Amino acid sequence: MTRLHRQVYIALLTATATIIGIVESLFPSPFAFAPGAKFGFANLVILIAIFTLKKSEVLTLMCLKLLITALFTGFSVFMYSASGGLLSLLAMYLVKLLGPRLISLIGISLAGGFFHNVGQLLMAAFIAQTPAVLLYLPWLAFFGLLAGFFIGVAGNSLLYKIKPIRQLFSTENKNWMTHS
Image (cartoon, rainbow, N blue to C red; front, side, top):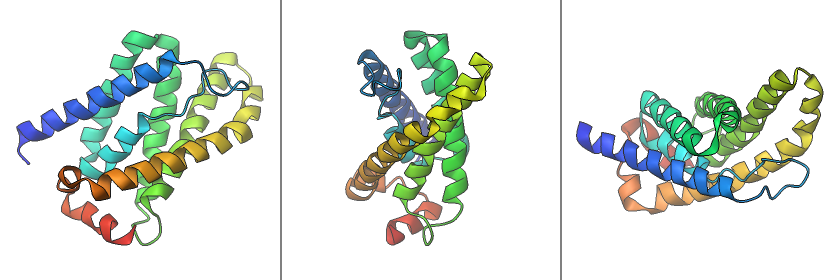
């Protein structure tokens, strides 16, 4: 893939993740006990990027998505999204280091879903100046893992069944295709 193709691909993924994030923010939270909680459908794009782009490109995509989305949703949403998104991304890369023999794409997504909520709660505890908000972790962890599972299943389907995306795999990531 040429440099221009990679830049266009990153731009398309960024636009897709941003639009999904903005549209999802327009709907009320489906979880009455956790205002602002959402399913995180935009994380499907990040998961695909982890398996089709270099780490630096995924970080660029994530930062652009966070900044552009913040223009439409506000700074407070940005702080929670950034803390959750960046911790989630770090966790997914660390879990991915275990390799395809020990962890599947779905497992990587589960880690992302869990740590996204951890990052957001840590930001909430920092803003509220109390660790009491961490009491929401069991509830949010359950829903984060549930969302992570479904995002992982969808990501698995996209990466392995859609030929144009499958062709973007680097040599390193092709091993994941044979072990998932």
